[in-house]
Image (cartoon, rainbow, N blue to C red; front, side, top):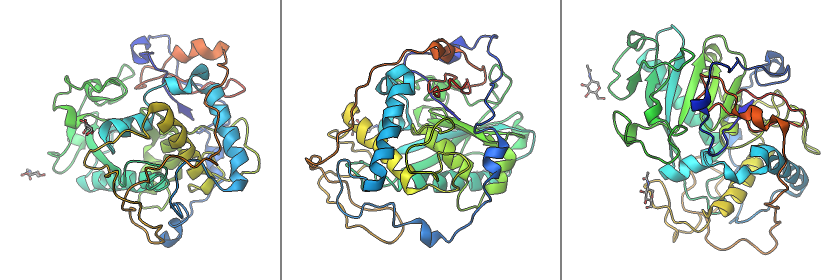
Length: 388
Ligand SMILES: *[C@@H]1O[C@H](CO)[C@@H](O)[C@H](O)[C@H]1NC(C)=O
Ligand SMILES: *[C@@H]1O[C@H](CO)[C@@H](O)[C@H](O)[C@H]1NC(C)=O
């Protein structure tokens, strides 16, 4: 289940009392039966690397031939269905966030529970967020001028019902006891990227360094999850039970949404049937998932002008460094993406499509008060109601 706000719609301001609790179709990220098909799989970590690294200098679009057709179907579908045909008009994808921060992600945890949290548990959650996000980002390091060789994921704050729930030393985090209009602990909106897409965090109490790009919302008793530009929401019990697992697959799926990837409850692309964004079909990021992520970078970086921009933040790479040879070892790839233009043989993927009008457009402004940015824009072909 994903939703992503449309540009220009300050949806949380429209979170009037009319917003209802999200209704979802039976086939959704929230449907336990979708996920129960999967038994947790732990696999040796040595298997999880190598395939997702560029095997040679790569720029442009050159997926494995058997994936080219389904990838194009997926991208075309996104162009048609996101933001009413204006996919590029939305400006707060995870991509926009990491480009704004020069390659880091600040997160704030919304602890929607009365359980207490030890400092050790907080550390485990930071570790899990990093490890799981790296599984996606390993597909990008060294690919097609992607400017970062390591994206760090930091937890800068926790929102709780009562500060007494947080054990240990909390000097390294901001602790919030705000609630949203639904009564759920919320990190200060003044510090949140989805509320301040212009990057102006001047009202954030402890300064822009303590802003958060995404929330990790952990909710007692929630099955499945939600994901969007605002972050991820999964069940508290699910996440705690999965800490230390190789693949926290519902979190991985929701992180995919944060970086623009779609759900596949209403259709499946040709010839691919197991991938993490097809909920319930894979516990791990597959090659198809990785190339869907790359497809976003390929298209968005060209549309946004990021192929030529030279980010020079601490996490970015010098454009004069050459790409290191493909490694079969794990660990972040050093070096930078090549700066040569895409090969002439690159398959161009159309960036324009006829905007679709949809009767569901109006519903995209309906919102649940507890959402950071509660606007659903990716309406499935069957008009499934996204969490709004
Ligand atoms: C990112 O790098 C650019 C270019 O050096 C710089 O102008 C900008 O201030 C940096 N932004 C952050 C948040 O570090
Ligand atoms: C908490 O940790 C910080 C460093 O992170 C340290 O400076 C401070 O003394 C600690 N406070 C307590 C009460 O231990």
